[in-house]
Length: 121
Image (cartoon, rainbow, N blue to C red):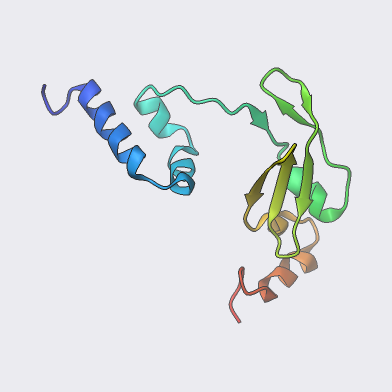
């Protein structure tokens, strides 16, 4: 096999991928460029509205969360006291750091800098 063989490159990438932590794996594939380069099938079965967290932090009605078949999913979108966004579907939950910074209220966003996990003191 030659060094520039696409299959060898793909195998190297998959080996390196297996060594990464779950959190870093998600970050590595988030923009889709690596998946496209190595022809990896990736799906995003659930789509959050661009403003789901903004609505949650501002106390507005949260848009529906839909799956890849355009079916509405029974999900909760919450903002924790530390500004983390939380999506709960059934007994599973996903956390999104600093989601409260999406608030439309400038004073609320600036208030988050007083939290030790976001800003400096």
